[in-house]
Image (cartoon, rainbow, N blue to C red; front, side, top):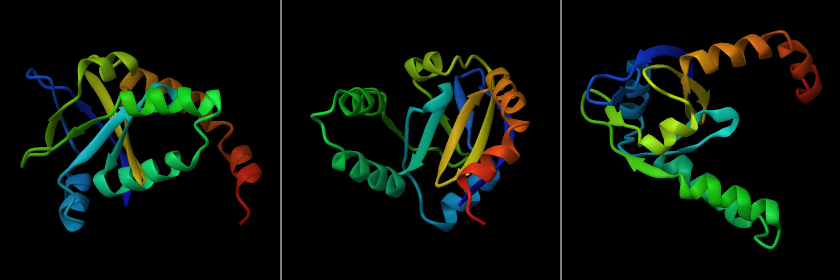
Length: 145
């Protein structure tokens, strides 16, 4: 559903703009509301409302008697906030999420199928550099094509 990599900057009012491709997808699927939360690898995850519900159900199935489950759920759900991008696709990321992801101004917004990730541009560049060499090896290990 969401695919691609887009460089943007946070504007003077602290707003992020959803890439036009993602706005088109949102319009096509009547997505008005998104959820932001702490993502893995120090990025921000952004889910459509429907996908958020799916992920929430998965996490509800995990046994809360396990310490790791409780810890993950606390970080994931305590960090969550809903956003409604305006007609131009702009929305504000809360400061605590920007702090978590080390975001100041320049960002990269990427589509990862069922979610969007928002990265500090420098952090994304580091992640990409460190991961691109192992891409084929990882594919070999996890995919059965």
